[in-house]
Image (tube, rainbow, N blue to C red; front, side, top):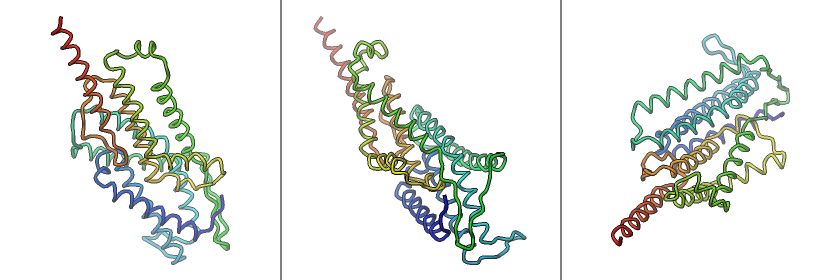
Length: 300
């Protein structure tokens, strides 16, 4: 996909500003999860990349510690960023999910400094491994652009569409299960005392997720249908990561609603949706069931 260098630089700066805007607005949640720390690292790398490419574009030819940079390196660095960002989609998707399931299953209410150091080390290691994988990949090929016309040929394919399909299939399966009229099968899978609260939590979790991210989800669905090409380094952004994080928080709450010890927790790492209704409803439902059983025992 060919694009002009000035438009590339403009889009990179706009992406960086959007990333930092979301990070600043959600700053209270960014240091609580792996997703938040990766969002901060992505905003930093995008900003450094944008600043460096703009410096190359205006200076045209300069050297730093014996390294010479010309306008040729604008396309080179942009293509390398595209390949690295394409590699990161699935690993980040899986790690965000594992972190949310682990966080919501733990009894701690705050993120300790050891956890934060672990997140920082994990984020740095992930970036390093992605870069090493790209440079060691035998199919890694760079395309030279037309520097006289200020054109670059960038990589536009990305696994984000695959991640989106997996996400939509999971949401569809959860919604169909929560509303499907299979009462006998449900009773066999779950205990009857927690069945109703679990189903209500599933419905409310999916409703909260879809109502919050409906416009973004529609945009992600119609973009491939309209054949809108987007560079790979643009598809991996902070908004997309927050969207994925909200999805896994919803899934983690759906799994936790099955447990009989679900309680309101401060470890929920999402600043976009309100998830506390699951714990409140589940507790009320179980207390109601216990009170009704106690009344029947008193009567007998």
